Amino acid sequence: MPTRHVSHVPAALDAVIIGAGVVGAACAYYAGRAGLAVAVVDRGPVAGGTTGAGEGNLLVSDKEPGPELDLALLSTRLWRELAETLPPEAEYEPKGGLVVASDET
Ligand SMILES: Cc1cc2nc3c(=O)[nH]c(=O)nc-3n(C[C@H](O)[C@H](O)[C@H](O)COP(=O)(O)OP(=O)(O)OC[C@H]3O[C@@H](n4cnc5c(N)ncnc54)[C@H](O)[C@@H]3O)c2cc1C
Image 1 (cartoon, rainbow, N blue to C red):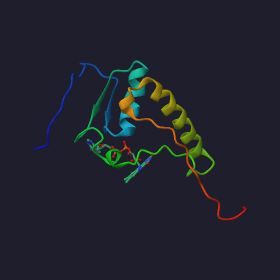
Image 2: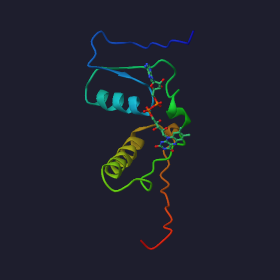
Image 3: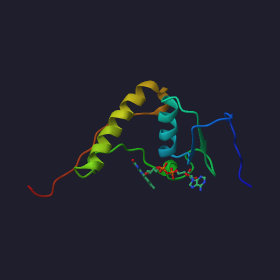
Image 4: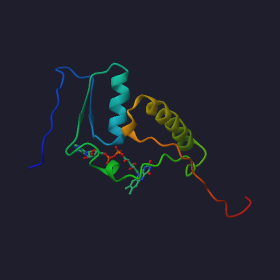
């Protein structure tokens, strides 16, 4: 039987987010910041899915021009802003990336 952790749940919620990975956590964080009452539900621990296995790189250099790159650039800006409000344990470390072109084109 898995461990169940239940923190205080308000009587009325605006949103229930299923999944306590980075995507669910981000949705909950920004929804909460916008004034919504939010609960996050997961069948396991926080970051117990793919998020816990991630390498933690925030890359834009591997994105094709278009919507994916636009979102990655927005995300990079949001991470930078977020890092200013988070405690040092969050370990945000800007470090850039390098792509080597194999030909002139
Ligand atoms: C080896 C590896 C390295 C990676 N490195 C990077 C990297 O450097 N940079 C990067 O940007 N991305 C990286 N990624 C990708 C990144 O980790 C994922 O895109 C990201 O973690 C997905 O987050 P998520 O919140 O969507 O999913 P998850 O973290 O998987 O969260 C989903 C959650 O939903 C829960 N859930 C699912 N179904 C239910 C249900 N029916 N009821 C209740 N709960 C449920 C799961 O338990 C889980 O906790 C990497 C991935 C891997 C595997």
